[in-house]
Image (tube, rainbow, N blue to C red; front, side):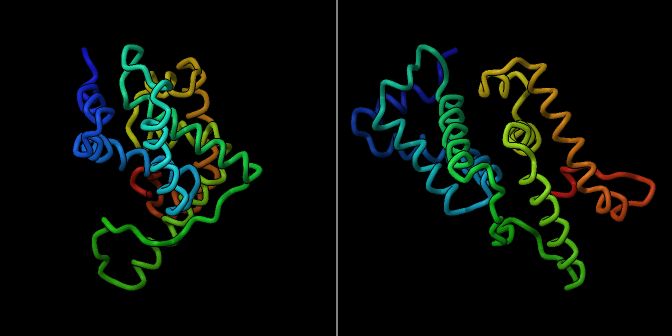
Length: 196
């Protein structure tokens, strides 16, 4: 099955700005979310997301539509840029900017809002404390909804390795978030998706 982005990319390479904007809008949000969750900075995530598309436009020889779809190529560029940024930081954990969630619904009381913010910060800190390879697998699987096979192809590892990284990441998060999980529902642990 041909890549649905192929025609848009061909037109973008021919100078069609509308085609490029269509490609950008199709892929921008998930790439941004991934980079943001890996690095914890809105500004850096925006810069690296833009850089993904800059690579696509300025280094045309890096993407060959005959070898695969555009989406996985862009994910690979985003991953490489995020890991390079982590290496530049010495794999230090970034301070997560607390800008709030623009999509969040209103919370009825100030106390409830405070507890939700604390819980969200605890999850962000726990995810940020994971080793980079575990963090990326967790983000791609839990937050971006990619399959184990898709992640394995992206990170150039076999599915078993991806499963093991995901399992280790989840175990670390369970330990780090144990107080929150128990306080949220005594006798019934909560899942990460419900907490984040």
